[in-house]
Image (cartoon, rainbow, N blue to C red; front, side, top):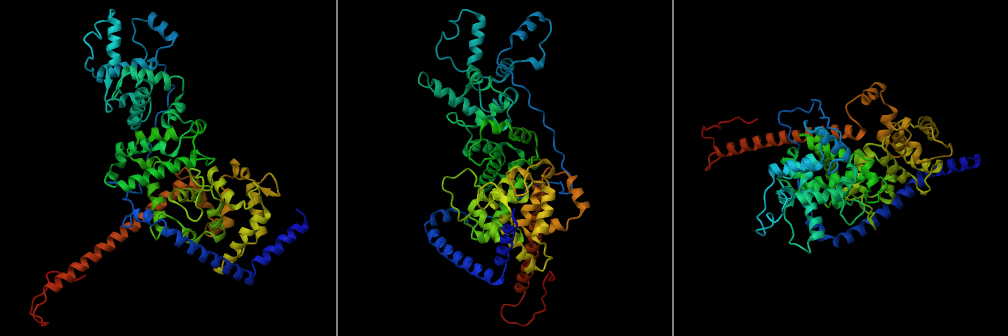
Length: 566
């Protein structure tokens, strides 16, 4: 960069940070916000119906029941079994020859094909349907054919089919209802014109579904094809709803939510949004087969199927993580319209964010599910989830690209010196107003460049932040540009504490933050309950004192209260 360009940058920053210019800019901003507030009030009248539907008296979600457990005890995560290779419906030719040559020995269990395993389950739990015609079975001459036809007509109820889901298809047990319904839907669509619709799954229907949807695909593609709609080539947001609802109904760790339907819905929305945040990295609102294969989504579903404590599954499904996200949103949403405005978001983290980055969040930050015309005047609950996950963990690829799109003002994919100076100028002014030691822009930038080591000295690109050696410090530059509290904590960090953080039980910064914030919320709730209990006791004492006073006069009659006031 030439000397004249650097000088121009310094002059511009000096002009922006002068008191007169700052006051003028503040007046413009206040005038703009006043106009926006007037427009917002006018638009709000058009949304009265939706606002009235929002529960005004809804309380925060219930805490996760712990029983006799303590929050200080470490959690032991169960190691789930790795997924095995898919089986064929019928034995391979080599296995058939081995079975014929080794007729005196039982076949090895790991070589059992899906047909034999399903046959055992149907023979054990299957039910025989009533015969539709007297000669439907007896007309078959071969005894083997009679047995085969009889087995093919056996059916399993949905409750009994769970063994097929778990042992044969190797899906989590809460996939049972969606899988059972998918088999019925596909069968009735294919053969509904020639026969009456089926309401139960028979052995023949399972064989037909297996050969069509399972046999030629591996575990990842089987999961992908089950979740997506048959007519689509990708997974959309609503495709996950039947599976999350089944999880809410079946998992023992979520049984306490059965009497809180509104929070069951919010939990489902949170889980689905978190899935799209991590898996749909291009923010297209669609999840492809390749993205499923590169993610750990199926492993998380398998793990939650084996865990009784759902909070041990920190990927996507933890109830404590949902509680933290929803309560943070609830704390900022003062008017309870389920929308976060610019003024609301400025209060996040004790006003740690600069007004400049808040404006950029509303203007340029990625929105979940790729809405065609997003309303940039507010953040919905799903938008807030994207923001908060990115803010509290800046070490992963999704959050890096989220914040890079915000600070890349001109949208050229490069973060240049001018853009960083404009953001940091606001931070310098805040340092000065709060009485903190001023860190010049050149010193900050030199320190960050030494840590990140970008490919070019002229600008930064998103890939510079994603280098393996700087993944843990890449968020420091973003904090320096727009989060003053976290930047000052970074400047004053304790090396011993940083080492302890790297060696703790948490997999990422988000898991650590969610655990600590949940404990904070629990302590605050406990303090409120104790305070309310003390107020109740004082109220009871006052009432008893009033009841013991004479009704006719104010003279004391010698009667005293049975309990002394606190």
